[in-house]
Length: 541
Image 1 (cartoon, helix red, strand yellow):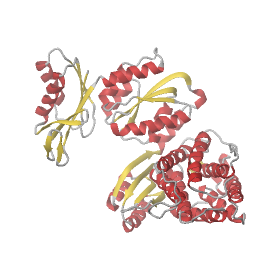
Image 2: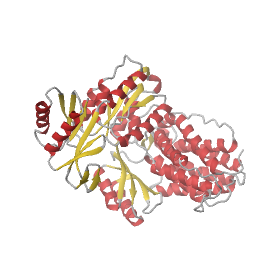
Image 3: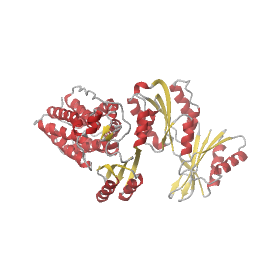
Image 4: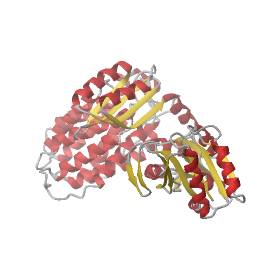
């Protein structure tokens, strides 16, 4: 049994909380109500805690005080809170990040953390959570964290064990009362999903402090309803979320603008210079919500979700027990309607470019298969694909990521798929086919830079082979012809041309004619990929 809450205990709690949340993820996802339907709260909390865990794992500080004056436990808590904020998904994830921030701010300066300090910190956490929400509603996660703070204070003890037990018990009682506070919960016969997730995390804290196995019994649930959102009115069709680097006064103006565009507004900061903010809102005018962020500062990691699409995905997503053990699926990432259609034609579920972990995970689960191959088709998406694979594994779905770096490699990999082979052998064959496909892309330089092919200026035509600039030109047609000649000079029997959305008329036909004249024994397949920014993607096999 722990007498103090130190840095090792923080790390243990973070890991144990994530593991427990994964175990209860589906149960929490199925608590699908909050004034209007509430979807995937369990998944959002898992992804938020996974981000917190990654941040804590990067910290190797074990001394009592670091060089910058922070206590080791304070540093671990701040890393956990910041990681949760930067990876927060949905309303519940953002609120959880603020609960963790309140704990970190309160406990960070304490030399030794015992029961009374934790009770005070839970009060600060509740205040931070309420402050994060523009229009707090009782019968939610907010009510549960407030009850936890009340329970901790009521313990009237400096004993860490007594305080965390009392906090968890009072939170559970508050969770059971949430249907009395929200009629929608009462009609559905469920408790609040976000509050349930917080109780799971508090039970993990009790287990870490006491050293005892704490069984968190499942709560009653029902089948998922037909829409998916965590908070707010059904009047708004989209959830918009992004990180924003901006100064405080600009953020205050942003809150006013977003408050007039929709509801479920949460804007919380994580410090830094300039500070980083996590912005979450439900709107109908997506463009205006993002434009407001651009006016305030620098938005990034922008995520837009249409609730109607989530509802369809939730309805079509098979339960884990329904997955055929030998069933196989494929998920590919694509930018461009034509390219997406090509990959779907090869049997893949397609996700738009630059997906989040949650979006890839949804696509994996939507296949209904127990074994799934993911084709990221972009070096920047590979880490996200690996994260989605780990999350899917926790749900009993085996996922292998074939590290495709271009859509042409994905097409090569899908062409050799064979359900008659063992899954492992099929993955190897797909990886070999992708690796054997040399890939190139052509785009226009957006700024001055020094490349391995020499300096370039804005507007220059750049031809990249294996992600390195090989040619710099001024004429699109000539640069593309030179690129094809360079690629085929190294051998090749099949060329795949994916023509971009902004390519000039007759562009693909002209390139086919060039290959037919210069390389008459090479087969050419030309497709309308429709990808933005890149007039041409090339694969050579």
